[in-house]
Amino acid sequence: MSDTLILEPTHRADACVIWLHGLGADRYDFLPVAEALQEVLGTTRFVLPQAPTRAVTINGGWAMPSWYDILAMRPERAINEAQLEESAEQVMALVQAQIDGGIEPRRIILAGFSQGGAVVLHTAFLRWEGELGGVLALSTYAPTFADEMKLSDTKRQLPVLCLHGTFDDVVLPAMGRSAHDRLAAAGVPVEWRDYPMAHEVLPQQIRDIGTWLVERLHN
Image (cartoon, one colour):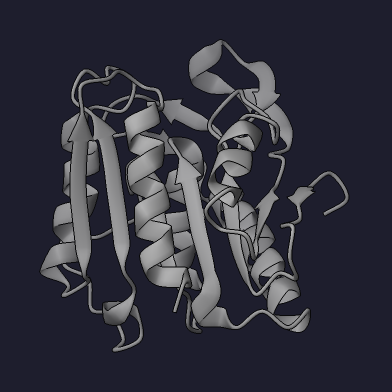
């Protein structure tokens, strides 16, 4: 995608983090985070795609960067699933481009904040059929996860880190916890960490993400 922001490391890239922003943000939203993380991940490329601009029903139909339309806040988010699938296709194309460029699938991490997190969870567990290195799910939820999911052996080995704010009133902590619990019930190695924050990102959270990424990519 031509509007994707790519942050190259100081040394030859042998790993990649594909990071999706949230509703109403843009590809530059997590650029400072990527720059900070590259200080400890000197061979990791960060790929920051841009969501298309489209009308969002819950925001009065105003057009804004959105991975999919949100039709209603209750029940637990009514969404335009066709648009979610389109976004998943975009993510899979980015993953394939990294593989074609020589990055091993086990060294490709999908990350997403809020709506972007919903896209990467859907992509990693319900769409992408190959191997991946892990998933970072920040302040997000999983609108397409079933109460009981039967996953392949490959998917049951995919590590996931769920991070959420205890004061989040946009994506309630219970929504994030539900995604975590469904993954755990399916046998996925998933961790849950919460922070005294709202719908945002804190420095301690970024440090924890850095440690988690180093554990998976420095081997």
